[in-house]
Amino acid sequence: MILRQFTNDESDLKKIVELLAGHFVSEHKMGPLSAINVNLEKGIQWVVFNVNQMAFGVEDEGKLVGSIGLHRTSPWYSDSEYLADGWFYVLPEYRKTGVGKMLIDAAKKFAEEAKLPLIVGVFTSEDADTKAQVMQKLGLSMVGGLFAAGV
Image (cartoon, rainbow, N blue to C red; front, side):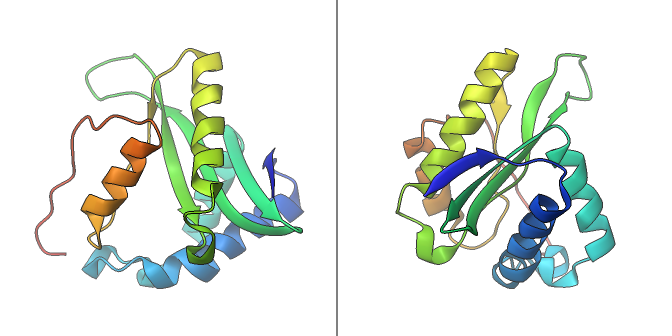
């Protein structure tokens, strides 16, 4: 498996969109926030926005099996920037194989080089506790949470 930085090259963008629209969408079920309600045009714009800042992917024999996209942002109350994930997704059959760790390690290294904090979210209603534990095992600290009604 190979980790590499993705670019806004058409073939890289296509791979990311196929991974997210073809796989993430079917898994992400959160009522009205479900990825099933996908707006592909908006999704492509989001992918391009993140890839233009930083995106990594892990490929297995040319197949994209996981990716993370990052962008700079700041809290509403401050000009202090941090890196946030636009997405972090690994195909189910590649979970527990080290792909997630490769992606998070690359994101942490990029954040360290940029001298910015890194925030990666767990935005799901399915098995959120387990996914949060995985993030902690990957060396990230919990700094809050999302709480929802109507999903």
